[in-house]
Image 1 (tube, rainbow, N blue to C red):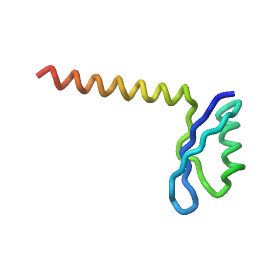
Image 2: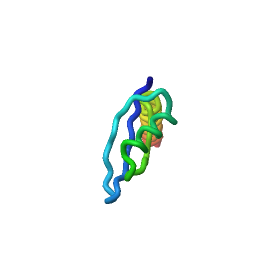
Image 3: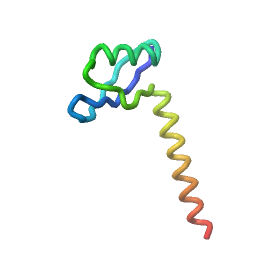
Image 4: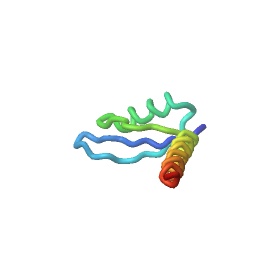
Length: 71
């Protein structure tokens, strides 16, 4: 079981977050559809995917910072 974090959009257009455990991404989507039938999933990622995204973002920022020091 992996832990997933979802950003949801409710029927009024407001965002809210949900964390859940599921055997797969597909099972996480299924559980979210059942539990929040009037809302939609905007973003869904596991802890591992979130860590990868944050690592890529950090590496991009380091490159941008280093590029500005070269002039």
